[in-house]
Length: 154
Image 1 (cartoon, rainbow, N blue to C red):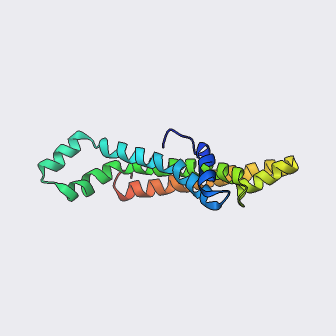
Image 2 (cartoon, rainbow, N blue to C red):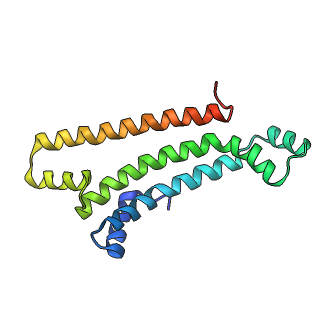
Image 3 (spheres, helix red, strand yellow):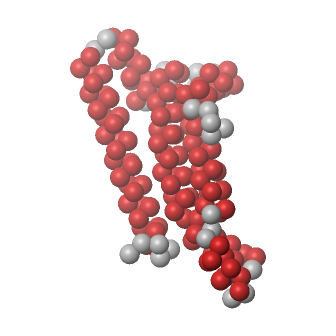
């Protein structure tokens, strides 16, 4: 799933769900979920061996080991995955709406292209970029707050 771009899922989504919002949601999910899974798996597998040994030496086992050792060690990668999922999902949303003409920014983009209004097209592109940049900034802030909460940043 992770290797296939979100836009490539649009035709399959349309075949399964028609030209509906469900097709767009399905496209977003397929475009975004893979990166979260990959990054979470990477974070879990990359627990520093010294920390893992120290925790096991001090008696951490089972859920205690997972919750107090693995989760904090994986948090940076999980947050990276969520931030990337947002970016991939945003792109998949635009592609899905563009192809299905579902109302939204992608659907509006489709209508503007049909009318060949260059000014409106450029304004909408700036809006889409602005939303992307703003949400990414929110994710960076959330990522920092989570890192502080788990003691990974000062």
